[in-house]
Image 1: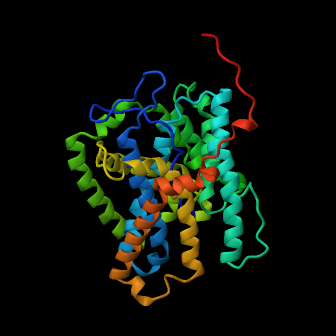
Image 2 (image 1 turned 180 degrees about the vertical axis):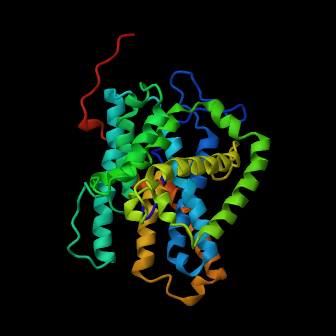
Image 3 (image 1 turned 120 degrees about the vertical axis):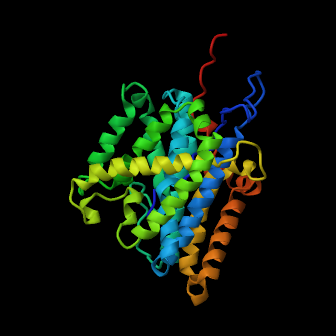
Length: 368
């Protein structure tokens, strides 16, 4: 995604139940596991925030309030996605079956959408000489490349004694080098790595802790304070730090700012992630079913954002006023919601969740 880190959302996987308020996964042989409503709700709400954040980008320069909202949302929406992605990557053991799923669920969609975005933006942005480069993620596809790398390293993090501090050290070092290679958006992959590693370390009881009533009450005050601080900081702070895309020097700061900001932003983002998860409903709602389609919403809504620039949807003056800002926000939420629906998933499953059984050797039957 431009300017960000989303959520993107991880590929749909069967989700284990996390608390007594949700239905537990079935364990009877032959029955499909039931999805955990809490995580599906969290993924849907997070993808809505991703779409809103992209919709607000052309409005930032004319509104301090929009910029403050944008900063707060970017502080936690992708960290939330990445933490959840890490949580559901705990079982990745690099076995042939898991590698097949990684290729079909992450690598192939990356190739498909990297190509599609390159061709579409070539036309929409009038850049006929734009090359298709699978090493230079365009727009939203960086998350798939990062997820592929993170999951491949899962066995390493599960064997390290202090995985989160180790990952934070790597992220801090990534802020020091402006010359760090841009292939596969490696700097951003490394700077967001601690959130994925933290997700690997979490257990269901950790999510139950943040969903207690007292945490929900406290979360309201925390978000209110975050918005107030963000509004004050708009002219004083470069929100590009939350994109985790550049080195400290590239952001106009001394090199030593990088490690300091890595720790500060990690603490800030995790606090807001906890507050966000505290208010995610654990019961089934009307949007729970959409949680299984957040990867579709993530990958497809970028075409709408590019089209908005192509046809100058932000051109009218009223769009930059309060009514326009509210309208843009609602339209973004509706569009990404539609893109997560089952009909869209059925039509585009061949690109987002392709079946590649014939491309792999059949696994030998295991003895009973």
